[in-house]
Image (cartoon, rainbow, N blue to C red):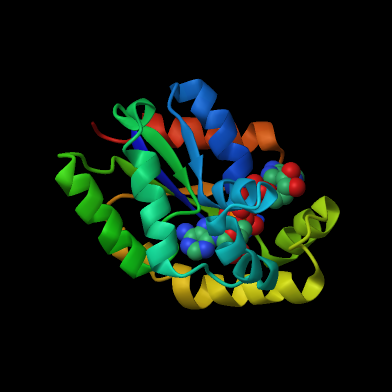
Amino acid sequence: MRIVLVGPPGAGKGTQAARLSERLDAPHISTGDLFRDNMKNGTELGKEAQRYVDAGDLVPDEVTVAMVKDRLAQPDAAEGFLLDGFPRNTSQADELDKVLGELDQRLDAVLLFEVDDEELIQRLTARGRSDDTEDVIRNRQEVYRRETAPLIEYYRDLLVKVDAMGSMDEVTDRATDALADEPE
Ligand code: B4P
């Protein structure tokens, strides 16, 4: 299956994508992880991304889209994937449509993870990644509302809502059940 995961920062997209990747035997492709790997290894891409990630802003589309295109062209993504953190705005979604169209592929579902604002802050503060400081979290939430939330309308025909409150196991079960209920 070709699945996109959408949700506010801290909703558990990365957590659930890793688990669903095992259940569905499809690669987990996370733009956040790709940026963090590049930053750790000091690549040109990592240097370019660093200031945006540190501030909680979106990395420019041209950088992000090129990186995702390369990743989707790898052989392990040919039969399906879980795309975590991409697209994050409607112009990235248009680019994804184009890339998939060129490969004669299409998305099967867009999972939307829904969590209360208070719970989001608690999860991120407890994790304490370098971009999990209060100011940066607030900016990421604002960027989500402004840039990413419009994807809910964009993907209305593919949207599968998942209640992402509760334990990680409960959320994985709900997401798996919701996907199983989707028509082929
Ligand atoms: P991401 O890495 O995508 O960060 P995120 O949205 O905060 O994470 P996620 O929702 O996956 O939360 P997680 O599972 O980790 O992006 C980081 C930055 O990269 C962005 O700010 C941006 O700068 C850049 N970027 C990424 N994609 C981009 C794009 N397409 N375009 C431009 N820029 C881009 O969960 C959070 C915490 O909650 C964890 O500690 C987890 O253990 C915990 N948790 C999860 N589920 C839980 C549960 N059920 N109960 C309790 N805790 C739970």
